[in-house]
Amino acid sequence: PRMNANDFQNRYLPALQNSGAWPNLLKGHPYALFMSFSKAAEFSVSSLKSSLSLLLDAEFRLKSSPLPMHIVLEEMLISLIRLNQSLPSNP
Image (cartoon, rainbow, N blue to C red; front, side, top):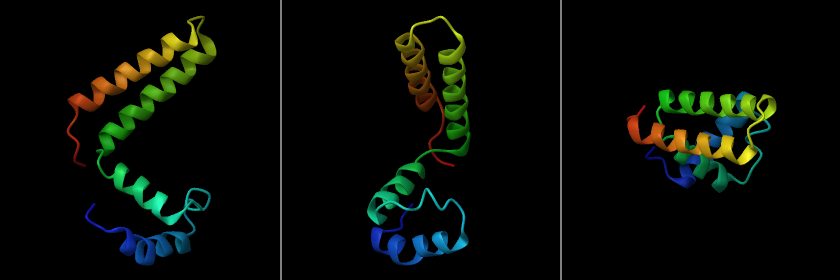
């Protein structure tokens, strides 16, 4: 979390790219990738898992429910906001 953009670009990003993990996700501009990693570090693993679960549930409801799309999306956004207000932010 305390890494600066230069260290990320010169040390961490090349190591990630050489590892072969997530090749399609590491093709962006180095600073944009740094900002994405910095933002992700603000969330706990528990919060991210719960958020993905809400997203998956909304996707299922969008594909299988007669509810209007905006209702499903509004409910998901409200649930995400509630979740992120109730969970601790540190991993």
